[in-house]
Amino acid sequence: MDWLKKIPIGQYVSGRSSWLRVIDPRIKISWILLFLLTPILANSIWRIATASVLLLITFFSLLPIRIWWRSLVFLFVLSLIVGFLSIVLPASETASELSIRAPNEIPGTVVLTQSWEIFRLGPFDFGGFSFGPLIVDRRSAELGVKTSTLIFTVIHSVNLMLITTPPEDLVWAIRWFLSPLTLLGFPLEQLSFQLLLALRFLPLVQEETQNLFRSIGVRAIDFKKLGLKTTLSFFVSLGERLLSNILLRAEQAADSLMLKEGLWLSPAQLRPDIVVNPRFFWINLASIFLFLIAILLRFQYGMS
Image: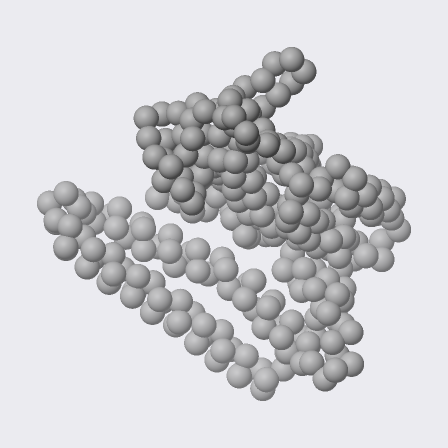
């Protein structure tokens, strides 16, 4: 019942075996924004290329395989399922209203793009097809590709950053990006400290969830004999218990802060050593150079 600990989603895993750990956290956040924002209004080729680059970064990151392979497989299967449903399920029109004939076969029709043609490579083309009432054409295929790649890119890129970046470094980098807001009187120090507490609180939430699932396994509850209504009420009470335990942990953390007479650590004091260490200068410079190249490629080849 320790499957939650085997899938470290959104949690920092300590270690020194990867070059991702020594990159400046500000550069990491810039790359995450690249993965999150560049798919907007991008074509399917750019979305697939972004997901492929993210996979290559994962494979050659020198991270232990046990850290990322379970979450990667789970996310890959989830993306495939969502993408397949986006392809076969009608989006805006019913299946009976969709034409199963190629547009160029209809007299008097001016076709700007061949929506019936899904894929073309030289003289070879792959057209649409149907499964009874479900029809797959170019529009539905592009929707499936965009949906699956977006889910995979967003979740895996953020998870990869959280795995390789301590919460203190991440909060310091966010505070550095938002530092101009202090000129407007924005309480950035307090909010950054609250963000640090929230990131530190995630492992506690996972621990409480794991304990509840372990207690269910110990009791060997047979849900088939309970019935649907009893099973639903059981999970509702389980959620209430989980929420109660999480609020208790939060209250304990608040009490510990009160014992320190409201003293809190400024994020400006959390400057990571990798920022000032000259040994990591070249890898940070290479990361910035590749980041600029990716932006240029996005505007050159990624427009839809």
